[in-house]
Each structure stands twice: as structure tokens, then as C-alpha cells.
Image (cartoon, rainbow, N blue to C red; front, side, top):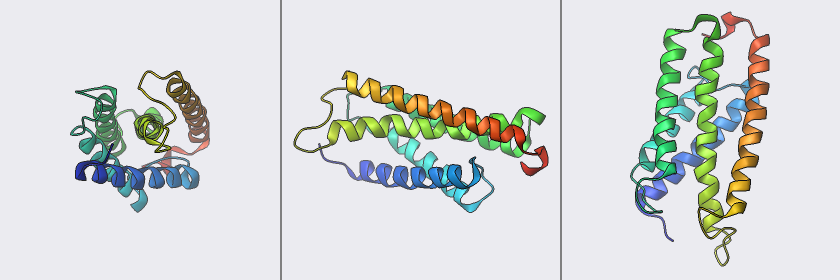
Length: 164
């Protein structure tokens, strides 16, 4: 299966987004629009999700397209919450949940594409229903939940004034 131009653009923005997201989480323990890298992450994530809505490798509209829509919603809602602070004391948690969820939304379809395509001569999984793929999703989701709980714990210890 070869990549179209749209597929390549989607993949490049996705790689940029994931690298930026992991750096942000490692260095800052959260994703925010404030640092330049946050802007790069959120814009690359929006572009990746938008391009994903035009890719139909596995038939018609599927779960990956749903994740693309959820990603766009999470970024837009997170940006609005970060700017307008509608939840006051809970806002920093809500923004972190919105933005961090996009990491999970990146990883699930990325994992699917990697496991269906590689190694080239004998991919790890042969279909979207393969148990190995679903076990990998479970592992990624558990790791994400541990990261999210750790992030919320860290946010709890931060003064509210440090999150504008």
C-alpha cells in the first residue's frame, strides 16, 4: 500500500505533532498554546486530523475518522478553555485533558498504520480485527491513563497563577 500526497502530508504533520507533543509533556508536563512548541503541536495536530478526514485506506468512514473529529474538537475546546478560563479552578485540568487526549488520538491510528504496514514483507497484523492490534491499543491506553493521572497529580501541586 503506497501513500498518496495527502497521506504523506498527513504523516509528516503527524510526526511533527507527536515529536512536539512528547517534548512538551517531557519538559513542561503539559501541553499549552503559550510556548512556541505548543503552537506547533496544536497546529500540526489540527492539520493531521483535518487531512485524516480525507483518507479512506480501510473503506469508508471509520474509527480513525471519528478520532480525527474528536481530535479537532479536543484542540478547539482546549484552546477556548485555555483562553477564556470557563471552569475557573478546574480549568487547568480540563485543558490538560483536552490537549493530552489528542496524544492518544494520534497514537491509536498511528499504531494501526505501523502494524498493518510493517515489516513490509510480513506486517505484524493483517486486519483491523487482529487481537495483537487490540492488545497494543490496550497497552497504549493504559500507559496514557497512567500519564494522565500523573499529569493531574502534578497540576494539583501547581499554583493556579502559573496557568494562564
